[in-house]
Amino acid sequence: MKLLTLTKISIISLMIVGFIFSISTYNYDREVNRIISSNKVVMITFDDGPSACADEKILDVLDKYDVKATFFMTGINLSKYVNNTSIKKVVDRMIQGGHSIGNHSYYHNEYINNQVQLVKELNDVNDMIKHVYNENGKKIESKDIPIRMPYLQYYRGLGYVQKKVANPYWVRGYLGTDYLEEKTGKEEILNQYFSHLRNGQIFVAHTRDYAKVWLPEFLETLLKHGYAFANFTKDTPSYYLNYGKLGS
Ligand SMILES: [Zn+2]
Image (cartoon, rainbow, N blue to C red):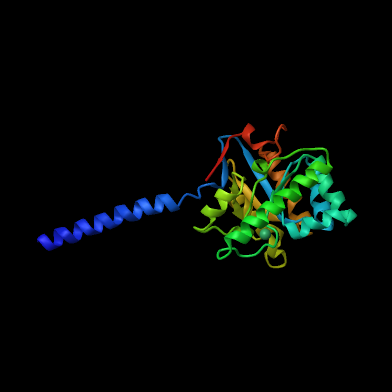
């Protein structure tokens, strides 16, 4: 009986120590999944660009419906901005059009065993993004650049990374299978997205030519049902804070 009580006490003590340890180390809480809003609003995001060809097509569709989106770019692709005129043109078009640019790491690797490298990449890509805004006569601070981790990876070690970089938000959202377009097809891509429609939803899509096939119907349907589209561009009607805060 006594032994049992002691065992119980030890287990409870271990749980308390474990809990304290977990709250002291488990402090990466900046991941967000939606805008907390009772309004009909969504975010549309495109990962892995910039790509001159695919992004021009995506921008044509977005502009046609006057929808503002967010493009999470890798540094390796954005580095072409400096000497590739079509990349420069498409990125400038995004910024001038009021779309937002986010940080998607430099090399798009898995970083679970390489936090120091990840910090460096995120800071480098922040600097590149600041540069392209600057080229367009606009200023942006790191804290206003959203981050999306490649492969939406999220793990305990990110707490260290989040302390080291200034960006407040790690943006997830609903990932359909638009990147498997040959297999999935337009109908299934739309079904997946629409079955996860909710106020404040963040949709994860990709910078791919196939977006021109499913995106028009997606936007048309959302607009018909009264949805607005938010992004991260401050001082514009589409800025997410006009609708609510970000949360999980
Ligand atoms: Zn990606």
